Length: 117
Image (cartoon, rainbow, N blue to C red; front, side, top):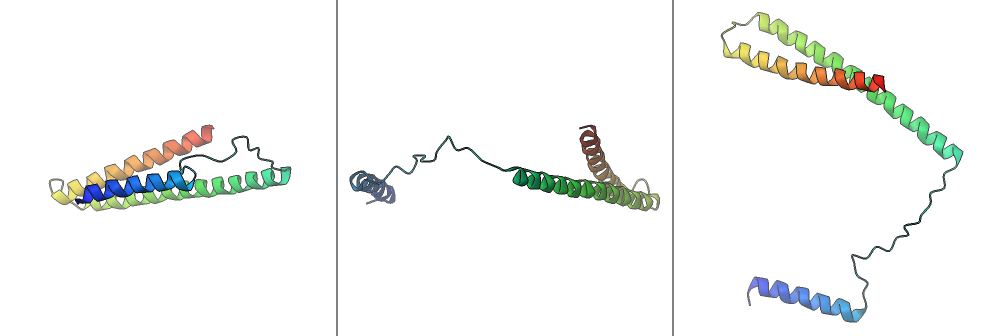
């Protein structure tokens, strides 16, 4: 008996056993679709405060991220001044500056969009 024949026989055997043993179909959804959530004002206020705290944390990370990126770009630009323009090192540093500048621009754009909202 080949492996695939064995797998097929096993699957068929399980289907027949499930049919005769009265097991419920595993794919059937038994939940209540009409579930209503009942929140009181204190819970809503607590959740609202939690959302505000998390948003403040996100804002602080964004500010840190933009400051860090700008510092890193400044350090790389100072290294760039010490390199020969035609060297591979100059090109690698310039590529890294371009990548960091793109990330900085994206972070500032996200912050500006958030501020507009």
